[in-house]
Length: 261
Image (cartoon, rainbow, N blue to C red):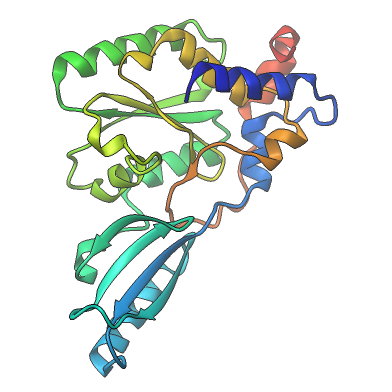
C-alpha cells in the first residue's frame, strides 16, 4: 500500500469525532470476513463418487469463511476445483487432496490467537529465502518497532513463501494483489481484525516511515468512511471469532493520552 493512501485513510479517521473506537478493534468486533467460493466444475450429471467426494469437501470447510458449490461446464473433460475471492480466481486444483488444510494451518492458528488476545495486529514477513534481501527488510522492521510505543502489542511472524506446511497461507497472501506472485521481493503484511491482510509493503517499500504509517492507520479513531471502505483482503480461516479479549491498545492510550490524539 502506498504511503499516500495510508495518509488519506488516517486523516479521515482523525477528523471524525463520531467514534473513539480504534480501527483495529472496530474491525475485530464488527466486520465479518468476506466469503471465498470453492467451485467444483464438472461435465454432465454428478456421479455417486463425485457426490460423496463433494460432501466430504463441504464438511471439511464448513466452519471457514467460504461457500462450496458445483457448476456444470460442457467445455471440460475432467472435474476440477477453483478457489475464488470476489470473483477473482485465486487457485485451481485437480483433486481434493491438493487443497487439504486449505482453511487452516499452524501459523494461521497462531495469528488468530494473537488477534483474539487483544493484540493490535500481526505483521507477517513473507521471505524470499534470499538471505541478503530478507535480512535487510527484517532489520528495518525491527528498528521501526523498537521506536513505536505500540511495539508490545504487535506480533511478528516470519514465513517462507516456499513453506510446505503453510503453502495455502503463502498462496493466499500472494493473491492479496494480482501481481504479487511475480515479484521476488520480501513482503510485509499487516494482519488485523478477523484475519484481514493489508496490501503489503515490499522490497524498498519496507521502510520505517511506511511501517509507522501502517501502525498509525490501525491505531487511528474509526470513521464511517473507513467502515464503508475497509482496505485489505480477508484471509481464508476456520474460526468463529467469538469472545475476543479487550484491545490492549486501549490501556496504552489510557496511560498515555497523547498517543490517542
